[in-house]
Image 1: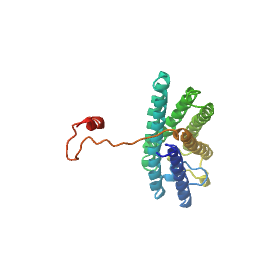
Image 2: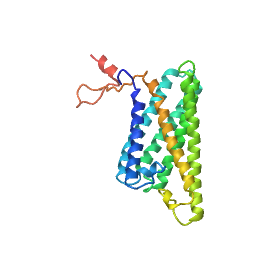
Image 3: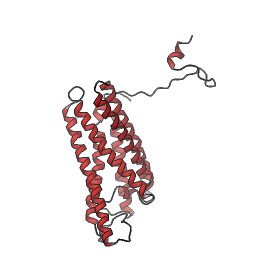
Length: 265
């Protein structure tokens, strides 16, 4: 991965993520598809053509986030070498949760809220919910690695981000549900507004704004958390190797590995 190892990968993820948020927001506001005052992130990518860009970039973010989750897991495995059984177990659980969270991001990218709302909301809950727990677990892991493998400062930073992420997730979920409840108290037969518009004087709009602010905050917290891996990933080297098992591509493999192949006279 070059002289800086894999340190550029969290930066690439952050750049793509910010580009996705910025471009879809600007497009949707310019076209009048959303209210400019804190719409939900998903609302900015619900209509064409911004939905196409939203899906493309968010799918890329989903792949990159899964890659970062796996690389972080691999770093802990290599440093720990199974000496600390509790650290090993938590690291594995965090790998599963982080991967599921990345899959949730993929669902959000491919099922817009105006298309299949149930799958979209489920994907958003999995992405942000499992992502928040993932951050909390790796904050614990960072403290567990002090002082043998890591410093206290980065552990404290990750703890602050993880706790802030949990609070933002709970705030976004609670006020989002409560905004819909207040709206349906006045209009029980109408669907929840998607998107919300302040000029319509909709009941519950102020609670929607709190939920949307918390959602945007949570998104940037997730981005900052992955970005905190950059300095650590500068110190690792990743290889992708090809090992041919045949001398001619028309032949069937008769060796188990490149080692046995090279040992054959």
